[in-house]
Amino acid sequence: MPRAIQITAFGGPEQMQLVELPVGEPGPGEIRIRHHACGLNYIDVYQRTGLYANPLPLTLGMEGAGVVEAVGEGVTHLKPGDRAAYASNPPGSYSEARVMPARCVVKLPDTIGFDTAAGMMLKGLTAQYLLKKTRPVEGLEPGDFVLFHAAAGGVGLIACQWARALGLQLIGTAGSAAKCELALAHGAAHMIDYSREDFVARVKDITGGRGVKVVYDSVGKDTWEGSLNCLRPFGLMASFGNASGPVAPFAPGILGPKGSLYVTRQTLFTHIATREATQAMADDLFAVVGSGAVTIRIDQRYPLAEAGQAHRDLEARKTTGSTVLLP
Ligand SMILES: NC(=O)c1ccc[n+]([C@@H]2O[C@H](COP(=O)([O-])OP(=O)(O)OC[C@H]3O[C@@H](n4cnc5c(N)ncnc54)[C@H](OP(=O)(O)O)[C@@H]3O)[C@@H](O)[C@H]2O)c1
Image 1: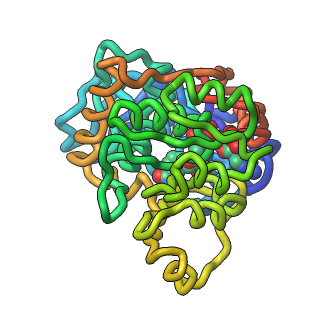
Image 2: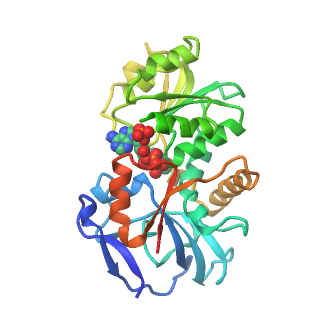
């Protein structure tokens, strides 16, 4: 029977157990995929702790790549033997094989390896919708400044490169000098080590006092207030994660005096709700990776059985770029 990493209670990495689970035949609209690599994402931590609740028992993981073994009724865009990859809801990618909805699975170009695919689908589609579709009301033009927190992480390093390809000046933050160097080498125009520096003051300095048009904030609790203070009038606060903890409730009244700001909370799963939208975004991602403008760094690899250690390292801020689990 295929092995998988499952939790039966919310909590720390010690809840993650390697188990054997039966995998049946795909039903209508489903496929069965055998994974060659699974992606690690911070959302897996939120699901493990219960911050994002799912029914238990739960096989973790929302990103993977492998070979389609079987397709259910009505699935026309995939067939057995196809190389494929996905970012998906529901979770379940920390496994050797699974049955899942076909809607979020796309064929993988021959030029993209399984490890790379598993390290880029959820993170790359997220960078895609943030930079292309989550834009301030005044738009984004080449040369504009954007602020992107945790710029040396999985989503972050893809965003640095993609922002450069779009002509944007990405100001990034990261928690060490080495991480700042890494992000600069991947296209960030400026980096701020927010473990040592006041990022609001540095953003004001870099932008000549004006602030940025948009902040992409996945750190959450620790950066929320400062991020709002980095925005110029009519700027957009795009919150998309909570690595430091969820943002506390706030009064909309604070947005007026700060410059009639806009706030949004985005999730990838709204953007990839249909097969057509998923395919269009994936095509854009495959094109930017295929052109060489964005490279996917797999900086950590763990056997699937060591997924708990991967979570510990991710939460301890020891990782950079993408991480894959190998079944
Ligand atoms: N809403 C969506 O659609 C969506 C989709 C994908 C990802 N996300 C979010 O985007 C973020 C990045 O995801 P990822 O998988 O690529 O992870 P990641 O960026 O590789 O790892 C998270 C990073 O957050 C930073 N961080 C800041 N405060 C932290 C804290 N208290 N504890 C742990 N880390 C902290 C760390 O970088 P430094 O040490 O440099 O601070 C850490 O490396 C996550 O918050 C994730 O939930 C959201």
